[in-house]
Image (cartoon, rainbow, N blue to C red; front, top):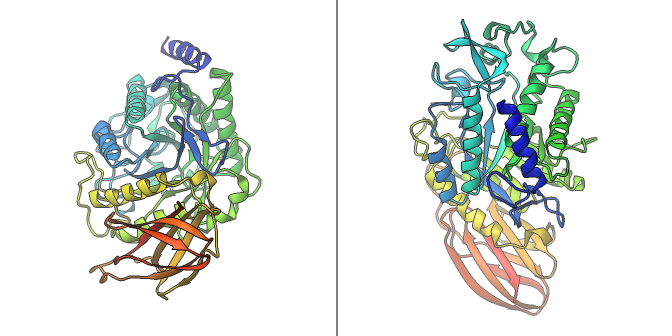
Amino acid sequence: MHQTLTRLLTLALCAGGLSLATAAQRPLALHPENPHYFLWRGQPTVLITSGEHYGAVLNADFNYRKYLDTLARDRLNLTRTFTGGAYVEPAGAFNIARNTLAPLEGRYLAPWARSAQPGYARGGNRFDLGRWDEAYFQRLRDFTAFAAKKGVVVEVNLFCPFYEESQWLLSPFHPANNINGTAHVSRTNVYTLDRHEGLLTWQEKLVRRVVAELIAFDNVYYEICNEPYFGGVTLAWQHHIAEVIQQTQRELCPRGPHQLIAQNVANDKALVKAPHPAISLFNFHYASPPDTVGMNHHLNKVIGDNETGFRGTNDAPYRMEAWDFLLAGGGLYNNLDYSFVAGQEDGTFAYPAQQPGGGNPGFRRQLRTLVEFMNGLPFLRMQPQGGVVQALSSSQHRARALVEPDRTWAIYVRPKELPKKIVTLPEPARVQLTLNLPKGSFRVEWVDALTGARQRETLNHSGGGAPLTSPPFREDIGLKITRR
């Protein structure tokens, strides 16, 4: 009965072009004028965030409303969340303290209902893959609706590989954790088309139900699988899941438009070959330097840096990675923020120094500076461009430029090497840039990426190399030049 009502409601909403979250709005889309960026709620959009470790829905102890309020205060507009249908982590995984993807015993919420038989590895009864947990889907819908209200896009990550046996032993798909007789397959054979021994049926059912629940939200896109380049996940299986998403969307909402589908391609960089036509967003992790943006520019799709980490707990490397990636033409940046935990959903948890990443209130304020900088640019009309910076006075720094020819120049200056740790901030320094600008009068604005401090000036230039000297800054600085 519930599924029938949901289907009727979503069909009615799709037919009327409405959204459960915000009426009369189309879902997040590639921008028709420049598909390297998004169109959302009528505005050109870059997605920027510093979000929790993906357990907001599946962890019953996590107050996601407080978390989303925190993101919205800093004008951050994206979060990733794992469905929990196949993957959850044990405590201590990856050396993450109070990991939101590792709920306490008995606090793991999955799409599947619990059976009457005891024996789940993390406490409680085993799962019945033939029945849904309706309370879970109510939580998923409420999370998504509240995110929509706060102006936050939700990446719904459907699956994740099992990096180690410890994760596979907690999965509802593992035969010891359900009453449905799933096969005893290796953890590296779970996400394939020919070695799964029946698991594909359950995976398809999960995808269809999640898509049906969220079909009418304007703030959702789906990522097929987190880091599929580990754990035996095959490309053929990923393409099949993309087709299941697409088919379900067409059945529920024949006239469209439909929510986007993302593929996580690689850590660092890779050339995307033979992309599936259903994919609109190609995500990378730890994409620094941002070479993968240029490598895949020809795809005319959004390229995202969707997870950071493993450069210590200092803010600098992740802030510099963000500026670098977006000034290289990327359209999405997500820092993995370990300061969000159950009980401290305002992102104030002081994690230990051995964490594999960073995040804190100060860092999120730094990202807000980047959000404001990007939103002040006509980025739809801008392209990465070399040759703008003819000379830079410091051999310890490098510069990157995003340009709208003859009208707008965005330049970012940072140290050549991304630091893993800064114990003491360097002394303030100035750099002089010689820029290849046309003749004219220009507005110049310097933005300190660390502090957010701004300095404005006017440049009257006769053509050729234009010298500009920065205000003092400690780590990195942005520069916006517009023709008056």
